[in-house]
Length: 334
Length: 276
Image 1 (cartoon, rainbow over the protein chains, first blue to last red):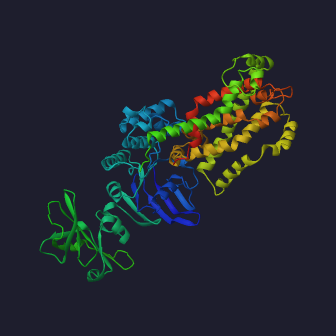
Image 2: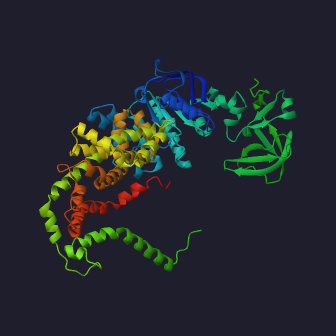
Image 3: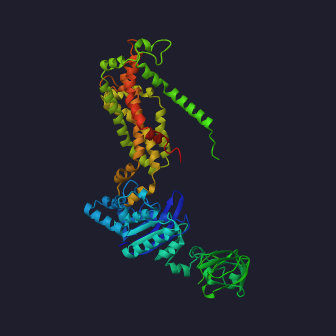
């Protein structure tokens, strides 16, 4: 079981309040991602749950029991760190066995669990190596192995993939998602990468300056961002935000149109501009359109085969049904 | 741009380095040479350098007159004991300063170091009285304690610098893995800091071995280490330079050999944290 509840939790470092009063419930078995720009308090929040930082006020409950004052080891949670934090002087086997040894488990039980974790994570061939002799991806797997052997009630991941190269990152992303499906254990995952958040999460928590901006499933956040911050943060490339007369036509302060919801054409469309830089991804092409009189740049996502050149005059038509409207306070207008 | 090093410049640098090295080593070299002279040659004017009748008679005389083995044993116990005790006390101290620093940690570190500035003779009298009171005079226990206290600031400082290099996340991982403070220090911190602890111990062993003020003033016969052994040859009985030199040579030989074999550790220990 692993239902985690935060009740008016705050955290201050001296005079600076990093987390203002915050309420959040993470359901058992849920894959929750904390996402936000750097310095938004997402890692601090994770460390509060882990018990590596003390809360300034408020209560943290794990499965209904008050865990606010419990030391990290007594919370039944396991954590995977950004730097992997493996014990450099121990072999892979000893690294994975360490939490079990600390729990004073019988040696035969330890061996069995370590072997099991090693085979699940494809680590059997490296079991007697030291972390220094492993690649980044292998180290990451050892760190995950060390977390799963304890059979914790929840896993905490602190930007676990940010030290890996792009290809490995995609692979590990799948592995972690796979692991979640297999174990069905609560996972809390911190990242600044909204792609990771979108692809892995059951529930995304978008944070800014310690505040929760929105909580919801990836598609909820994509379809109905509650405010301008979430609108700009979720989705890649970023949503185009347009103010002024065009927004007034829609009866609001700002409208948001996602790049994939704009048609680009040589002849037809209510908006027009000149093509600036285009990014060819093969499957898609991102056009950055200037001189539209709407915003500095309008980004358009088109099919990979669509060919416009730098300086071409083009016309744009936004899909009417997916225009997001925001008021002067930055909040969504339904 | 990289500095260009011409062969001439390199030769010059090498020569200068050798000259300075020899200058520093010269007193020791002279002591060793003198130990093989007769007493008459030892004080001859002008001094003889290499061309004299090399003799081992001084060594024979020294070994006959005093019990070298006992002094050596005392030195080993005192230097080893004080180093070991110091490390046992300094590891937790350095741990707390490196990983749970407070606003005053820097001040405490500096204050500890400042005690090294105090002239030892300034506290000789109170120290002597304390030693009498506790029956520690001329005991190895007393010297182990006093030398440990003298070197403790250096041990704490060195370990502190080493521990600072250990990533905090690893200790946090241990905490998440259920390690108590004790197991965190025993299973994670200490093994990771072994190279640092080793060079710290080595340096402090040498410092304690060479310490002469307290070892001379607080011992008589029973607990006297090699420093007292050397001093016993600079006696009012007359000038015995050759014998004094022989005594000095065999007193410093063990530590010279130890130092020679552990040069790398020592240099690394002393420069650690300086480049980063």
